[in-house]
Image (cartoon, rainbow, N blue to C red; front, side, top):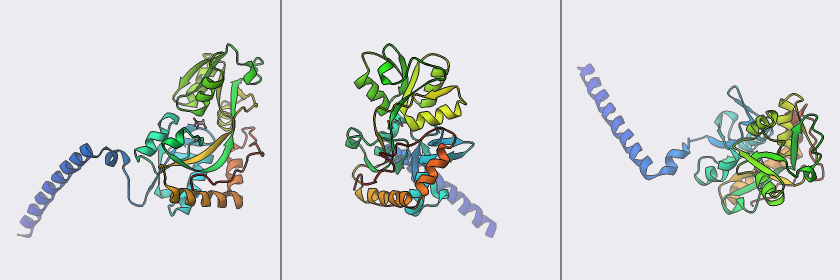
Length: 283
Ligand code: GLU
């Protein structure tokens, strides 16, 4: 008798489950954001780079780098342990859309604060100031700074401020090849398809370091890139909390430690004229 009851309720459960699945599928059709976001109770979704050594790097299922350490610090202050973090890859070109669609709660991905981006998203921070620079093959003598770019082939990333700066300042002199990530640009530089890669100095330092001496930084930065924490547009309360976490991280020495640990061996020195910055954005 009891087994019949069990069988019936099991069948009932199966029907209920199927109905629920169908309803969910229907809900997905009508609400795209609900499906794309895969929001989980008690978790925080953070966008980072997966292919930038020293900043955001996926290494056999773990995530390492300065952006990752800053993100963990903020998450902890917001009440999330490391296990509560869902890391998502946020390529340069997709960052605004990911925040607008609600795919992530915040982005720490070498993401420069700009007025253009602030039309679509908000920022907290800054938590670091980098500068756009050039990277060449070791031994290259013809490129000593942006003044030597005439007739050169450059690689940068679609959706980055680095590519925009090249188009604004050097469009008439250079050929720009755009790739989805800086690792692809480094490969193009190795193989001789381009003469230089351009983006933030701290990113190039990480790539050069992982290229074991085959690539080198030119070391003449020509912009200031204020790295912000990208958040949904207008979320002032979250910006205030993030800025408090960043200020604390800077004041107690954790920021300095994270920066040193993640750039060790990369021959990179942050510009002390701008670093550490004062996190005040977005409040
Ligand atoms: N910081 C620059 C930017 O936000 C270049 C680095 C990147 O593409 O992430 O566009």
